Length: 109
Image 1 (cartoon, rainbow, N blue to C red):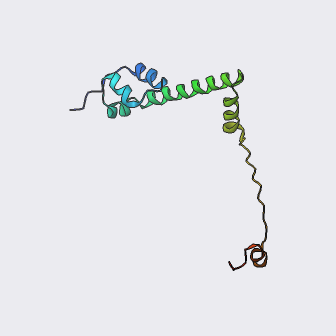
Image 2 (cartoon, helix red, strand yellow):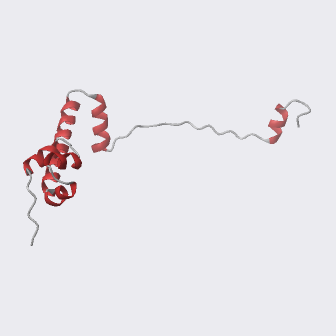
Image 3 (cartoon, rainbow, N blue to C red):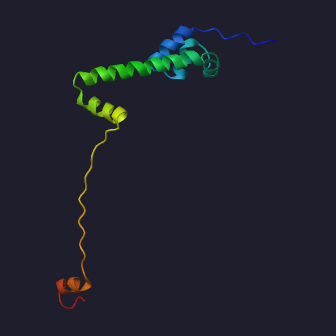
């Protein structure tokens, strides 16, 4: 005899995934196991998580347009390949044994 199909609110799954809830939290809210959730609501989970990501990007973009310098820098790094420039100055000096010996106090050589 086939197993009856799990009954739960698929719209709730999508909504909660859109809020960024974990699969454990979503399964709990729907009264089902995580296994059942993953098996029977993969499309709703994926759709909800994708919506959350789109919303976050939109809010970040709007905050950046509003002058949020940190977000402008972060978005530039993510999408424009920009990066912080770190310059280092290296100084090389060749010292001979004779020069070292000349600087040592008498009796230490």
